[in-house]
Structure formats: C-alpha cells, structure tokens
Length: 342
Image (cartoon, rainbow, N blue to C red; front, side, top):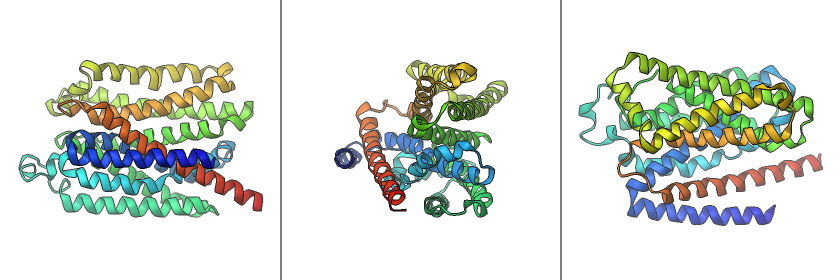
C-alpha cells in the first residue's frame, strides 16, 4: 500500500507540474480540461456525503456495506483546494461574463459577476468542508442529516450552474442543477460499489444492484426531460447549447452516453438473475462511473475552438487520479489501524 501511495503521489506531483506549465504556455488548452475533470470529480465526495447523510436518516443494509467506500470518497475532498485554485487562475479564460465586454451582452449580470461568484464559491467551500469533516468524524449523523442534505441540495445544484452551465451565460435550464446532483450521487454510489462490492453476499449485492438501477433511472429521466423540453420548445438559445454537443465526434459521444450510461446498465441491472452476480454488478458500476466522467467532458469541452488537446485532459486526470489514490489509500489504512486498535 505504501509503495502504491508513493507511486501515485509521484504521478500526481509530475502531473501538477505539467499542468502549471500548460497553464502558463497554453492556458486556452489547459483550463477547459481542468474544468471538465474538476466537474467530473467533485461529484464523488459531494455525492458520498449525501449518501452518508441519507443512510443516517433511512438506515438499511446498503449503507452499512458501502460506508467505508463512501467515507473514502469524502476523504478526497482536500483535492478541491488545488482544483479551486486552478479554476480561479483560469476563470478569465473560461467564463465570458468575467471579461470586460462580457457583462454588456448578458441580462443576468446580477448573478453572473465576479464578486458574487467568488462569494458563492466561498460558501461551497465552507459548507462542503464542514459537512465533510462531520461525516469523517462519524458519530450520530442523524441529528445534522436533515439540515445537511438541504445544504448539499442547494450548494451542489448552484455549484453545477456556476461551474459548467454558466460557460454559456445565455443558456438556462431549471433542471440543470438537479441533473448534476443526481449524477453526483450516482457516481458516488457506483464508486462505493466498486470499492466494497467484493465483500457483499448475494442478497446484499442484489440490494446494491437495485439501488444502482434506481439512481440510473432517476438521472436518465431528469436528463432526458431537459432534452425533451428544449427540443419541444425549439428556442434558439437552448437549441444552440445542444448543437455543438450533437455534431461530429461529440454527437457520437452523446449516443454512447445514451447507450452506455443508461440503456445497457438498465438492461443488465433490471434482470433479477443478474442482480446477484458480482461479475455483472461490479463492471456495470465501473461503466456508470466512467460514463459520468465522460458526460462531464461532454458538457464542457465541445464548445472550445480549436478542440482541446488530449494531453491536457490526460494531465488533469493524472493529477486527480494520483491524488485520489493517495488520499483513499491513506484513509483506508487509517480506518484499518483504528479498527485494529479498537
């Protein structure tokens, strides 16, 4: 474990150096990739916190099984500090409404402006940092769970609007934040199933598969309803948001998301004989986690011209992947040591 952590730490450090160099030499290539990876990753710790708080209220075997994996997901939250610093550095390249001529072309400048956006970011950091600390300390989460879930619902939804929807300040969707929150919970649940599914028996695995199916259907329903309403309304601004995401290679990605983020997992998880098969449930969980990452790339990257270089995405993924490995392995080792001591 220590060797793995050292390797992951080295990979993450080298990737961070490469990212800083890229931000200096090619900011228009690096910062969109940084945002895409950040938007994909943040759902893991935030969704893990939400699931821990939900289980504190509802109980159930699923939460007892997944608790170590969910707590490990929350333990990656410190990576948000360098990710936020990178976003603040590149904000002027990412968000047109922060540029001097951008405010004159938008009607929602009361919301999309630098000081207010920075204040909202401070609220997210404070809320998530506080809830993450409470979740990792354990104890009776039931007392703070109702308020904590309300806080997470508002902050995760508005964070998605600020991070990715506001890339096009003219696009508006009342379901955007809710879709992002559903995707975050699905990602966190899938990652926890990958982490803890090997020790679940057949009955427990069936419970996990059914819950994974329910979360997949919830996300797909919300995302499809947004598309259907925009298609039916045929408003130029909303249609223009989908246009670059449905053309060329990104159109193929959209088809892949529909097939691999919903249709295939739905078919496999809906069949009762397959719900208790580890060789089915764990790969489906991995597929759902990977497709949630790809979907966030699909949200962010298609609008950039010229197209984002793959090296920028690889560098950002290497930084977050290495950093997450270090934090998760450290936390799990700490948990095992604490259990042995107890």
